[in-house]
Structure formats: structure tokens, C-alpha cells
Length: 262
Ligand code: NAP
Image 1 (cartoon, protein in one colour):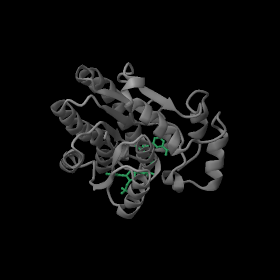
Image 2 (image 1 turned 135 degrees about the vertical axis):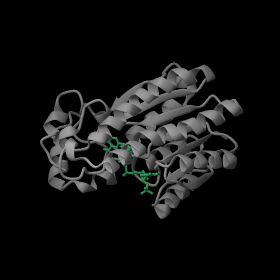
Image 3 (image 1 turned 90 degrees about the vertical axis):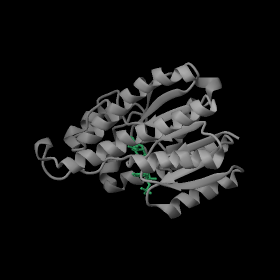
């Protein structure tokens, strides 16, 4: 049985990915940092789809925990066919602009939204090469990796996601020599708990500005992740960042959204 590890899978896009991989028959590893109960619920839903599923608690922003988790996953399932580096998120910036930005805020956001993917990908790639598995690594970026979010005060988040897009290209060209495909998905607004910080009024405003007519769902991202892990369908896609945003980043609607405050 193929096996997929999804980071940050206790809810939102990661949970959507876990369920989509389970539907495809993969054994699934559900990583979380603190939401153990939610993670176990998603694992149970995967088991009900007829596959093995296990929860892996680890802070992926910590190199030792992240790499230890990938090793524990391989020990449990014997292999890793797909890694989805999904854990991430933008924390509201403390008051003030870049010049007042606390170093810890920068470090934490870069660790979560960029370094974590490198920690997990390195351990996964080592295992795939050692076990001769021609697998896939899928990074979850953001449209803000390409279009800055400076005025919304999530500057290190944008920098990290932009770095993740370039990281995807860089390891994509190295790992394809081993038959490992690395690609990236850049979501626009996706309805998850991460949006709870916004008022209903703000959310309605965001939705109106998206050409599709509103934000997407975790399944919109998860279906592409499953496709990118399926070498029979996606073997010639290497190091790419694919935008999935209902047209949000095309027509200037991001600029309009920049006027809204956190
Ligand atoms: P979410 O609903 O806030 O869920 C985040 C998940 O990541 C949770 O399972 C959380 O688990 C986990 N997590 C957070 N920090 C972690 C850590 N240090 N170690 C391990 N797990 C951690 O987020 P989402 O909206 O689904 O977003 C998922 C990804 O998509 C993120 O990379 C985000 O940047 C990207 N994205 C989202 C949107 C959007 O509109 N939603 C748009 C563009 C990009 P715990 O609670 O246990 O920590």
C-alpha cells in the first residue's frame, strides 16, 4: 500500500489532503502540533475509508521533531510515497512596520512556512532514495509567495512562501534524477479555520472580489495534491508552483483586498 504523510492535517487544507489521499487508497499519516483530538478525528475518517491512518504529533518548525516524525512514519508504514508540506500560516504582525518588526516574529514565520518544508522534504527524500521509492513531494505555498502582503503586515509570510516556490524549483531539479517529483500549490483564499480572524463583513468583501465568486474549499487543493502524487498522470511536471485561486491573483483583486486590515 502506498503511504502519504501530510503535515498540519488536523484541520483545513491538510485534513482535506489526508481524506483525498485516503480515498485514493493511500495509508495516511496525519501530523499536527497541538490539536490531537482533531487529528484523531481525521485519522478515524480515513480509516472509515478503508485505509490505515496514524497521527504523528510534531512541531515541524523544529528540525529534530520534523525529521524524527518522517522517520517514525517510514518505520510505521515501511515507505513514504508522498509528502505534503502543508503546515503553515500567517500570524498577525505586532504593531509597527518592518523597521519595528521583532526578530522572533520573523524567525518563527520563516521556520514554519519555509524551513519546516525543507526539514521534512530532506528526511523524506533520503528515505525515498534509500528504499528506491519514486515518490512525490508537494509543498503548499500561497498566492502571497508571488504577490506581496506587505500592507497586510504579513511580510515574513510572503517572503517564506516566495522562498518555498524557489525551494520547490531547486530541489525539483535535483530530485527528479531519482524519479522524485517535487511541485508546489499556491492557494488563494480557501475557507478554513485560518480565516476565523476575519469578520463576516470582511469575508463577504473578500469573496466578492474573487472572479470565481468566492473562496475555495480544502478539496480544491487536495485534488491537485493527489494528482501531483500520481506519477502516471504528472511525471513530466517538475518544480512547478501551480496557482489555485479562482482567478484571485489575476485581475488585481489582491490589490483591492490590501485595503482591508487584519
Ligand atoms: P489552518 O486551518 O490554520 O490549519 C493549520 C494546520 O497546521 C493545523 O492542522 C495545525 O495543527 C497545523 N500546524 C500549525 N503549526 C504547526 C507546526 N508548527 N507543526 C505542525 N503542525 C502545525 O490552515 P489552512 O488554512 O488549512 O492552511 C494550510 C496551508 O495552506 C498553510 O501552509 C497556509 O499558509 C496555506 N494557505 C492557506 C490559505 C487559506 O486561505 N486558508 C491560502 C493560501 C495558503 P495544530 O493546531 O495542531 O497546530
